Amino acid sequence: KGIGRGASITSCCQYCPENKPLIVTGSSCGRLQVFVHPAISKHPFYLEYKGHSGNVSDIQVSCNNTIVHSICHEDSCIFQWKTLHLDWGEDNESSTLDYSKFESITGRKSH
Image (cartoon, rainbow, N blue to C red; front, side, top):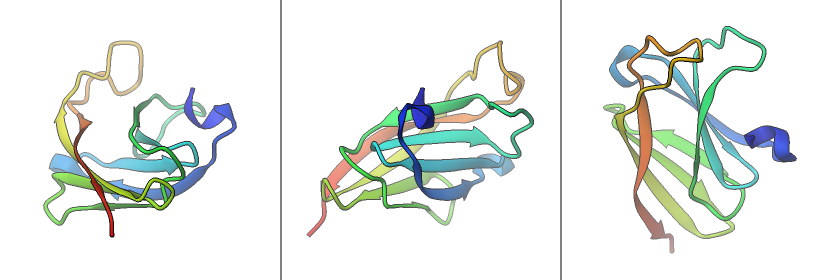
């Protein structure tokens, strides 16, 4: 899944909702992946979200850590992702942490 499918990481940003450190990466196949930071295993659990149709060229976080913006030059879109509660599951090292998930709230064409 994800980076292992021939895609590469093209952008990265640290994200700290409620002082819970995460790393958000963008890939060459238009996906965002969210990792717990620091990762404590060689193959860490992550959440993956598809939005763009090409290379995610940049990721930025709002000043109040509530919105993540991703940019793709290939599809000429800027996406805003807000966080919602998500249970990371019982079979990974993050299961006791109350982290967030991303949900695309807008996809706007850039000019």
